[in-house]
Image (cartoon, rainbow, N blue to C red; front, side):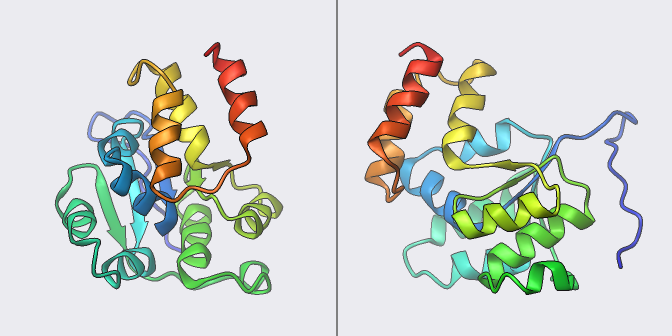
Length: 174
């Protein structure tokens, strides 16, 4: 279904590659944390369908420039969708993000939507959500505290259960 993809960087070392859907990009953009997403990986892949979803929003010009002009961000063309993904009836961006993650052998797909996450799990695609990105950033020493970042994400439109936030903050010792 897909051509062989080079997953090494110029030094021949393994490249950490994540594929993202539009909602995490939009959330991190509104919260002012886009660079955080890119700093966690060697390559952040944005399917063209996701890029189009983002650019269709009149308030996302900054995000569009970020996608097109940031080192480490790569836009990939639309992929042929496997029937295993098509049967989930997800949005085009989610469908393309999961498909690209499979075809590119990505380390993770960045998804917040529950149905999309379940689809990815059935295909054995590793998932990370927006909250997971924040926790991972803390583990890597890129942010000092998780709480303020989660708060900004929530103010930017992330819908999350308070009990889950409390559980995450307990987990990281905040």
